[in-house]
Image (cartoon, rainbow, N blue to C red; front, side):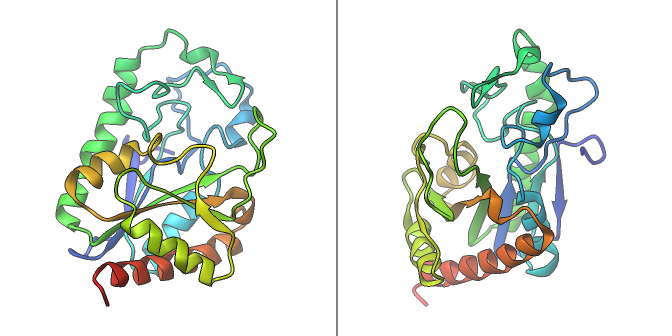
Length: 243
């Protein structure tokens, strides 16, 4: 849902110089004024949100001392993990599903109501936090409906130019016995908008973590993954410092 008419909520108070979390696709909420023209059942599908990420982000903030900036609007309304001028920022199709209500819809209004406030608030929050590491949290479906290609990982990492934190995290997840690697079929060189803007452009280290959604559907699973991600993030931050 949208809290206080904002397309985001923030949980926990950042401690300057520590770790924070960002969850761009945490919600499947569609405001009453937006008519997508889709089967409501699709709002429970991965095309509407990153299943399981809200629960993990909440737990990172409440139980592991990693404050979180969490989206409260579906990516079918506006994709907060796209640049404002990027294709797909207001998707008309997603994984083979037509989103007819977005065809010809007022993009500028969506940007004004949701996209700009989300990113303006995120940048102000990060300026205060001065984080040693940003954890950008996402989840993925094991198989896309438009592709027969199996995605073999349990967890994957994305990055654009700066892979320094990602390389440590891949090693640390491997040490936990997980199947991990660079994300496919898309990499952070193609889809990295939020971290390009708020991390790489600002010289802030980050981890963009994708967890397989069927591993984080229950509260118990989300709690386990929150603890694991917190541990990997803290150890990555230490590794970046050479500790």
